[in-house]
Length: 134
Image 1 (tube, rainbow, N blue to C red):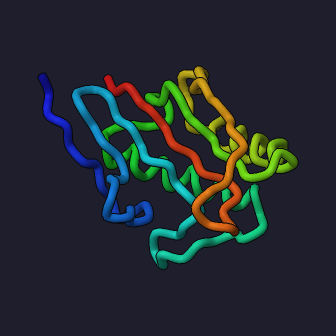
Image 2 (image 1 turned 90 degrees about the horizontal axis):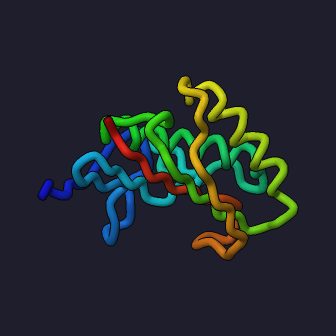
Image 3 (image 1 turned 30 degrees about the vertical axis):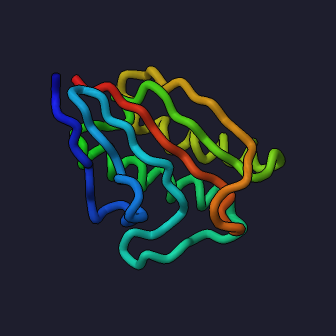
């Protein structure tokens, strides 16, 4: 049985002390839900802009994937949490733009989108990822 290890990088926002940015066990890598925080400043960015938030969130997810030895081409499942149904189309556009250049295999991850409340009032989107590494 393989050991479970925390995945950590300064290229993504520091997590709260109750969870890891990511966890790897064997060839499985789970990236914790990410918000629109700039890792360089620790500041929440793109208030009111779901497209900007989606792109920043995906950059954070990507940094954790890299730190764990993976990429979006290794991701089999993503979960998107949105606070407003009317933001779906814009989020989906930003998501498609971002992933189109990061999945050379041409196989996009499976995805679930859920509409829910999020930890910050100004947080419009949160995304997590599950990757299976080679």
